[in-house]
Image 1 (tube, rainbow, N blue to C red):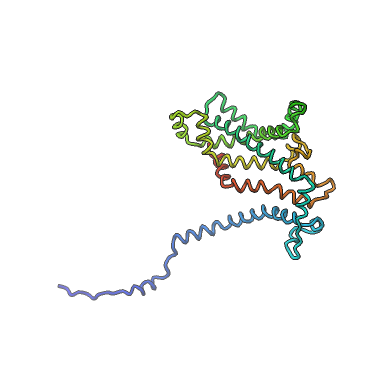
Image 2: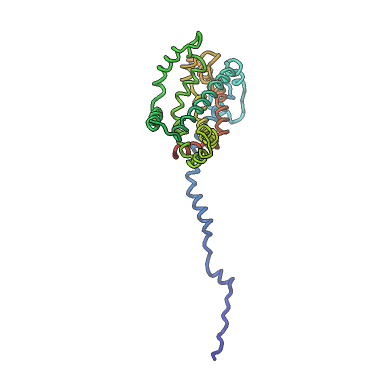
Length: 315
């Protein structure tokens, strides 16, 4: 029998100290690395946002300055003491330049010119996506081909058509119906293309189950396709609303510049004379015209990205 050897003991605290520094936690290291890697992207995004927002801030500041200050100094000088701001520009624009009536006219033009093409395009896009009929592919390619045709090439033919069509003693041109039809025709190709791709990405099993349960194509459209396509409809509504609200050319051609029917864009364009006078009023009027589009965009912006991605990369 051998004698037991000596018992070896170890001071664990000393062993830990002698082992050197512990390695960094892997998760913390990866998070730090990702943060450093994304820093250039964050800086670029912040820079782009500043570039986009500075003109809006300049417009807002200039709208509260007197005409002499606007003509003699930059807008940034108003941000240093002594602060000299006034609301006279807004009062003059609203009281003496018929801007209130023009705002109502723009609403009366924009709301139907946004709803009508979306409603018509939804029917057409559903048919292209889920209904079989002769020439479906060729007709859809023709609609997509209309996207590359500049609308300026159709202004004169459409104007001649509206002038020849008469409602009672008045031609169709110069009425709200004319500009509704014009914006509907010009906006339909993009609307059909966007919604068709989104409708085509919906699950086929959903529609097959509805048809087995006895649903008609109309029921499937209103009960399934429309409720599940809210992001695409909202994104399209933003595009169409912005386009119609900011339009000057089509409104000036098919509606005219008379105060009873002139929208905001036409009235604002008439604020500044041929010699450039009344520029200080232009900033106030332009900022008033921006308020409603901003409200619409921020109200529907949570659907915007989902709708654009669904209509562009799916289907």
